[in-house]
Length: 293
Ligand code: SAM
Image (cartoon, helix red, strand yellow):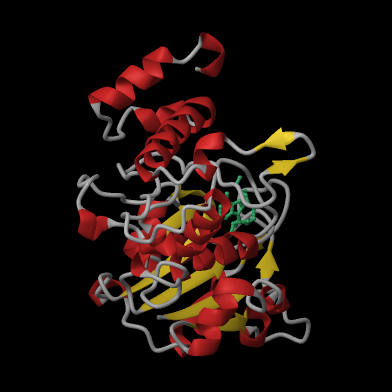
C-alpha cells in the first residue's frame, strides 16, 4: 500500500514513521509513505500556501492551487473516474465522517491512499469537492492540523495489512476487532498469545501444552479487550487475578470474557448495544453491582 501525504509540515512525520510497527512495515516495503511539501507547489517568492477567507472572519485558509498542483503531480485518476476500491483521496477534517476501526479495515484493502492535511481555519472547500473521495475526522475535537490525524489513520490502517503484525488474527481479537462467533472451535484457538500462554503456563507450573490455548476476548465482535497482566504476580501489593495463574484454560477464557464485558460496561457502554452477546454475557452484566455499571 502506498500513502502520499500532502502537508505544509513534512518533517512532522519523521518521528511517527521511525519506530515500532509502522516503521517495520515501511522498512519491509509492505507499505510506503511519501510526504509532499505543499510549499514546493507554490509560485510566489514567499511560498504562500494560505489566504484570507472570503466573507471575512478570523484566520486563514489553505489555498486550493498548491494542493491541486501537488495532487496532479501524483498521477492519480481524476475524481469522477477514480476506482475507490483501489485508491482514495482523503481530507483530514474535524468536519469529516468519524474514522473508526471499521474505516481502517476498509482502507486496509486499498492500494493507494492520499491524505491531505489541513491547517489554519481549514482548506478551501473546492479541495474536498473536486479532489477528495472522503473527509475523515479522528474524533470530536479540533486539532491544530491534519498531520496528527494523518499519522493516526496511517498507523491504524498499516497495522491491519497482511504481514505487518505477527499473525493475521492479531488484529481480530482486540478492542473493536471483528472477533468471531465460533467460540469453542479448536481451529479458532488464538495463536498470538503464545508468549502470554508461556508466562501463564510456567507461572502455574502446569507445563501442559496439550490443552487448547485460551482465546482472547472469546470472541464476539464489538467489545473492548480484556485486561492484561504480566510478571510479577504481585506488584506493589496488587495481586494478579488468581485464575490467570492456575492454568485452567476454560476458566481463564470465562474470566477474560467477563472482564472484557465489565470494562466495556464501565468505559464504553454504547458498544454493548450492537455487540453480539450470549445469554451468559447478559446474565453476567445484570449481576454486576450498580457501581460497576
Ligand atoms: N475550522 C475547522 C473546524 O472548526 O472544523 C478547524 C480547523 S483545524 C484548526 C485545522 C486542520 O486540522 C483541519 O483542516 C484538519 O485538517 C485538521 N483537524 C482538526 N481536527 C481534526 C480532527 N478531529 N480530525 C481530523 N483532522 C482534524
